[in-house]
Length: 561
RNA sequence: GCGCUCGUAGCUCAGGGGAUAGAGUGACGGUUUCCGAGGCCGGAGGUCGCAGGUUCAAAUCCUGCCGGGCGCACCA
Image (tube, rainbow, N blue to C red; front, side, top):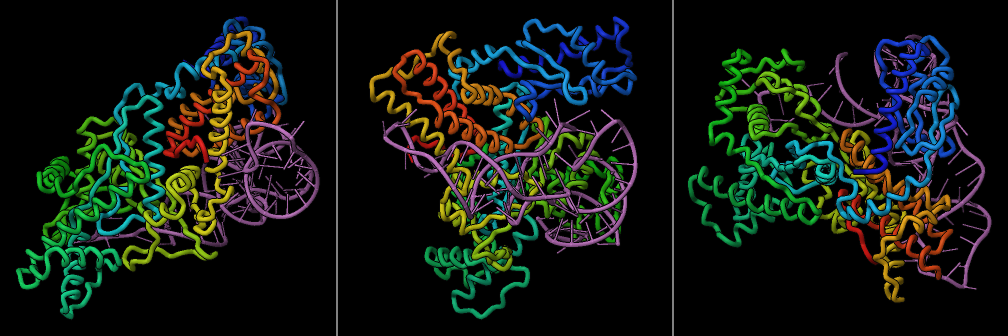
């Protein structure tokens, strides 16, 4: 229950009803009510809400929008909507002003709901899965993974706040060609370190971290695998290294505040025969054919640019085959909506993955793929080229050591995934106020400081004021702050619907700004106990909202800085 | 060549078909006997890449062009 959403939904419905009544009265002519919006106008002088209903009706009604607007207003039932006045403005907007007493319920609502404030039941408990990062366990985490972690985890939190039953999942690519290359690389390092002069594989992983891993193995096991069957040697090396890498990935993500519900092994899909079963299923439906000794999926039937190989001519399944099985498995586990976060360099994979789901009989719209542009790292004013193969990159671990979890997460999650992020390492290292996370956190710390001082001087800060006192929060600064606080549930609703957590980062930045403005023009700890109580409750509410949103973004809300 | 994506203030970026396109940052000016100045207030800064089209209304949707990024393997 949210006062803001309640007013908006009620008024929206009443507007439709008013149009119907105007039609019944012969004042307005139309067949079907077109889509219209009721929203908070950008300009405060345009009131609390505005609708374009009259303008979208002009075509069907063949009347001037302002005339339509006056008919609608005439038939509008304002009972229980808090609307105190309506006016026709501009080309035909209807602007609504609310009785400012609607704000009286905002603070009690926030304080009674606490950390639940902002929750909306958009999802109605629907099971959704967010799969993100899923980095190859052959190396360290990089900037792209960092962005994926921040985005995926925040999206999952956001959807939880919007009433979905969310599961976070990491897909472990522990099978296939790259693991083979990984094994060869490990073997080469192992033999090199033990004095054997063997060439490094062409497709190998050059990362320094790999040498460290192998050194660790030698320290533990010595040259035990120097003169054994190469298959045995590689199997041991891979098993050891994979576990070490995965542990490292898990710990790094935990440090970033990311906790997965499921770690899903690709290899398990092969071991259980599910990959094979899925290919047989596709073949049964007639979507598989053979060419040049390989098995191909007719993915062009579903919008792909070209058909794709699923089983190589040597009999081994491709990564794509395993991925189809994996996504089939997700739907079989009962997820209604499956969300993947991929780097934009994988965009070519989207059409065929959705196509494969169609082929299996699933609605491809239930597989939603969010593509993020890759991160461009700037150091010393120059772009840092990053490549796993060459082993040259700044790791997520290093980023966190430099700028900290809060700055890293906020910085990534405040951007639209579609935009390329320029992450200036030098700037981020400065921990200067240029980083907006400090601005928001500072507001939170300042709020805590006021409450602390109140308590220290013996004031009971936990009182929820009576309405008569809340009505004294009537300055422009207080009202704007209250309105912003009231909007959180709607912000959650919109952000969840669009799956855009970056909106929340902007929301709390705006909120922090409104608070700072309020702070500069009004004292909280005044002598008048009733006014003081009202302002303290406003402060507590603001703190609560900041904390709730920071929680979604995975950024800490410090009491002191 | 084909496909996806982006192009908005000096820089980094917001902007759900709507009214006078916003914020941060940088530069400039003001602000501190008073709850945290890491703050606040102010002015300056724009042919929303270009050209058409759809619409009562386009930064937003469509088409073409220009420019950047990324894909187009029996790699993942």
